[in-house]
Image (cartoon, rainbow, N blue to C red; front, side):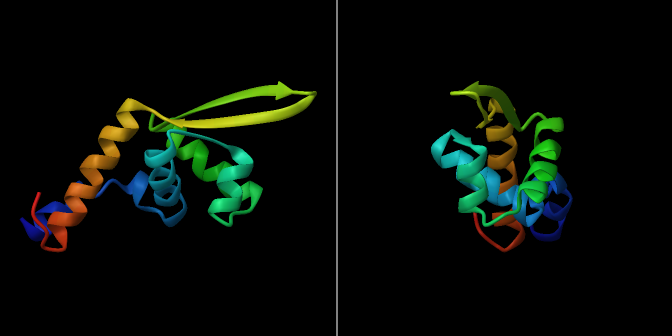
Length: 100
């Protein structure tokens, strides 16, 4: 394996903030925007940009609603997102010398 796996590293996931989102959502399935912002120590604008990239790739689903007249944004990992994250972790493991 090794360097051949470098091409399998998903650039959409590989960014620090997007990787943080995927790691968190892989564990909790769904989180609200404020929760992600706090956990990842992100600014609202920065997190929004990265969530949009993940959503465009089909890795997360974003649901916007209102609760008590306040906006609520919920982010969930999708099945394609879960598969892409698993493939990313396998490629990264192979790249650094791990086994499947």
